[in-house]
Length: 89
Image (cartoon, rainbow, N blue to C red; front, top):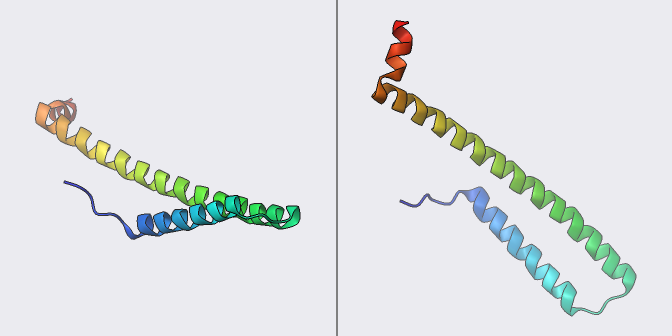
């Protein structure tokens, strides 16, 4: 079963597509070195912001995965009886 995409994913995808379009336009445009420098300064700033968003998203997903793994461990200990033997000791 596939998981529904979260709104943050769509926003991030939209931002990445916009970012890619602007980079493509920069490739195809002849501009002065100053205009190009200013454009790339903005691109680098936005890239840093996107990287921060992606890292935050990755960290959130990792935390969710860790929580799920803890739940699975508890269930498996219960099924195998390991959790019960620890309580008796």
